[in-house]
Length: 156
Image 1 (spheres, rainbow, N blue to C red):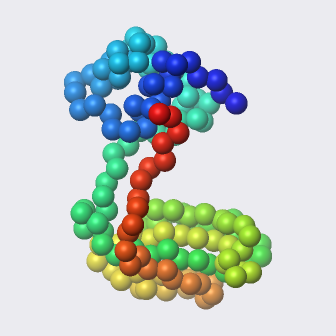
Image 2 (image 1 turned 135 degrees about the vertical axis):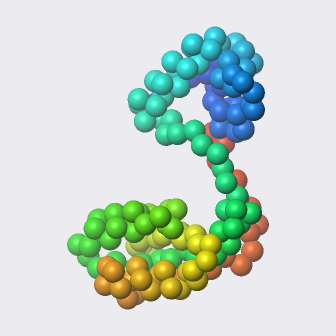
């Protein structure tokens, strides 16, 4: 397990939230945490090399950007086809999440995908996916109401 110093913990807490909108955001974060800009950048590079930090990115509210159609799909992938099917689904531009899960839901659904679309009905895209991998056994769960959606915070 990686041990973090207090300044690093403070920096991690800030980095997992909104990065300041200023000319030198990492310098501003470093100053707040008692680090130099160089120390913070080097630490971020170290976390990236170690696979602890995956990426920095903006969070887009997909509904407000016009991606109003979405569905969670559970797939009953035949034994021996999980790797191929998972990689194929994960490569699709309208799939945001693709996970193999265990134990299988209802004893057979092991691959889960999250689909987002602007124009096409999810059912059309899902039918194309099912046909492409010859997997006719799936369940579609459409979002009815969002009660909570947040990014996890691991540092205070």
